[in-house]
Image 1 (cartoon, rainbow, N blue to C red):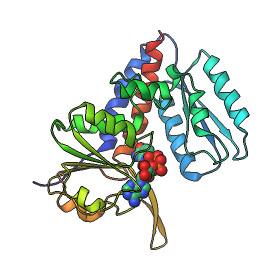
Image 2: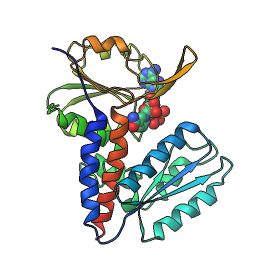
Image 3: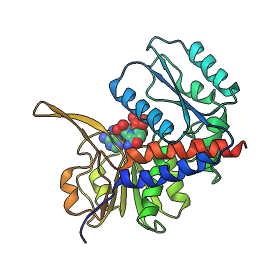
Image 4: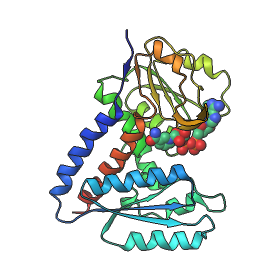
Length: 279
Ligand code: NAD
């Protein structure tokens, strides 16, 4: 079987076109608010992409930037006022946050019906119970990729590497609900290579280049990780999956151009859903 590389940019464009058409039919323009803290250049790029895409699809975008010394109270009050603002349909608190801020408490402050990243305990609970309000953006992007190629996960062994609330935890639950047999690997897992060698599908969300080196021939590999690596004085983006895996994978998502664009498109989709739910 020859490896098939999945074009996340093209697929995300299809979803964005659908969202754009739907937004045009809404009685009012939905607004997505994105809050971010600090001056990390990568975070600024991600926030900029979300703002630009929202505007390109006919939505409003409100980006709220705070210095790294911002207090919990200030952010909490900002989120509370966005909760009250009827124009704002989606609120995203961009990670990471500086360590002095209580991430859980701030995410909990977001009104669940505006929590378009699906990270509040209410929304994660609904997802765990099999009735998601919003499927978190990156897990949703991965599911859309799987559906796009028509891959049936029922009865398949899936290795989910990473267990964060934003990627690994919801995605492992969603795939289990679809009938896959899911193993979750994490920082304390030993002999990861033995697990990667056996799985029908590997989804890696860690941020460690070359973490996945050994795979079962024909396996479906979804690379969520993003790292910046220096090579010959140049900086490039890398996923978690070694380039050598390309020779034997069945399907593979590239970095960049795989899951990343899907995450942004799914955020737009969730914001549209948030808007339609309150019409
Ligand atoms: P996180 O730091 O919250 O979680 C990382 C996970 O990796 C943890 O569960 C940890 O246990 C696990 N881990 C760490 N070292 C490991 C090891 N040696 N072996 C196995 N597991 C290990 O990060 P996150 O927010 O879940 O993001 C993970 C990666 O995915 C990052 O590189 C991030 O940039 C990327 N990401 C990409 C997108 C996208 O749209 N492409 C979206 C979100 C996150």
